[in-house]
Length: 253
Image (cartoon, rainbow, N blue to C red; front, side, top):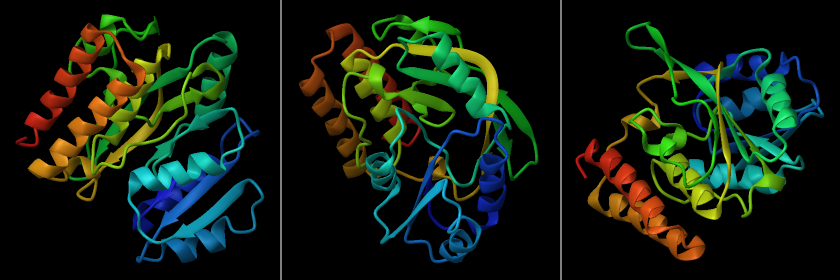
């Protein structure tokens, strides 16, 4: 759980985790240099709870905060929870059950309920098609709502992922490039039909951040670096490159 200046939202996030019906979890909380009272809130609310490992550091960005969390996590499975979002009470139980029922799958995807703070509306972010998919399957790019773009609402089973987990140090779309690396490495994905994660779309959400040409080039270089490392098929790489470029077009890049 990376944390940066989300004091308004972090209370419900922590509460939703503590109320999980699945009890065998640990949470690595990385406070990434918050200046709005998050650090003090965390010290008070989770500092004495043995299920939490609390790390305070200078601001290094979302990707690096997640990588610090990965390095400290002891479990075989990883789940990335952003500190301005919250979970259904049985989210972790559902994902764990899916992992036990599908022992060869590396990434298990749940659905998001997207809440707009500006309008007060919410909608289900539906991902299609559901089912188990090999990394070379065309499902990943069947439309703009494919699951490749996010790392939250997903369980990552380390023993079934044939590479180390590390987020690229880019300003946005780090989830997308991270997942594309797993595709290149040969990770199998299970897409479910269950809503487990509540995403709060607010003015401070990173998705609203603008992207400079240099930053866009950094993202493309990160993708090419993963392709050089894992040597995906030309078709798979072309799909990933096109998907990233389409996202960047929405940012004017």
